[in-house]
Each structure stands twice: as C-alpha cells, then as structure tokens.
Image 1 (cartoon, rainbow, N blue to C red):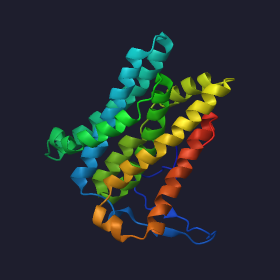
Image 2 (image 1 turned 90 degrees about the vertical axis):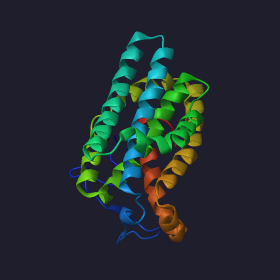
Image 3 (image 1 turned 180 degrees about the vertical axis):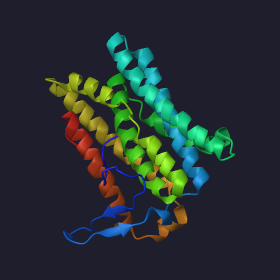
Length: 237
C-alpha cells in the first residue's frame, strides 16, 4: 500500500490536512466525528477485501498466461489473508462476521460491477486503483477505534502484493500509446464511484452538517495519493 498522508510507523493517526491557500499551519480533521459505528467499519472493511479477492480470482481464470496467473494469485492471496484477519478480529469480539458484512453486500457488489471493464486489463487496473484508495481511506478511519482500530490498521498495512498488478499494467502500456490512453481514461472514470463509497461509509448526519470545503480537504488528500499511483505506473492522472 502506498503512503498517504503519513509514514506508517504507528497505526494511530489523525489526518493532517492543509487548507487551500495555506502554506503554513495545517487544519486537522479528526475522523472520529465522521467515523461510522465500529461494527459498520469492520463489516465494510472485511467485505471490501473479500471483493478484491473475488475480482482477482476471476481475472486469474480469464488469464491465459501462466506467469500472470501466478502474479495475480499472489495479489489475490494477500487480499484473502487480510479479509480473514479482519474476520478473525470480528469473531474475537464475539460478533458474527457474516452478519456484519451482509448489510454492505448489495452496495459493494454493485460498486465492483461498475469497475468491471470491457477488457481484463481495465478490470485489473480497477482493482489496483479502487483498492488503493479504499485501503488508504479505511486506514485513516481506523485511527478512531482505539486498539481495535490499531489492529485493523496493521492488517491493512501488510503486503498487498499489488506491485504484481503494477508490473502487468506497465508491461501492457510500455510503448503502446493506445493502451496508455485507454487505461488513463478508465482510471479517471473509477474515481467518482470510489469517492461515493468513501462518503457512504461516514456518518451521514455529521457529514451533512460539515462544510463542503472541510469535507473536500479529505478527498483532496485521497486524490493526491491516487495521482501518485497513476504517476508510478506511467499513466497521466
């Protein structure tokens, strides 16, 4: 997972956001005022990882090249490991993981269907972009939940093997302007739907009461991380 606003030396963080036009002091937005109830957070986080795994396994079946199957299997395995770790945490707390995930199944499945591209490479890029944005977002939310949040942050910080996806994408676009242009446009289409998932995870009354300028700062940082991912792959954001 790429670094977002912080270097991840410790999982407990408060977002540090710089106001527009302010090059000096920063404005702090404490996610505690927007963070959802803990069980909602855990259920969504667990189901998102399961969704990454499901999409990647479908790509494995659709990929004829054995080397790519191996690469994708490592990324899929990392997502499943994170899913199981969050599920184990839920069970340790005495809750039923299935019941916590179930309320989010319909909406998150619909989101994943929107990210299925006409070509496998588009879908592969969608996993990389959306998983990166959402993992960073949930990592930030985790700072609101004490010790449980620390454990989730540690899980999300584990190796995701998504460098395997980057290598495949870079090989695809290397020297091929048509693929580069197509994937750049596809990535831009993914951002809006991903931001909607982020917004839906927050406490809606508190979100509605917060000024749009203040909320926008959160997504400005999220978009900055997205731009860095795109640049790292050689795609214009």
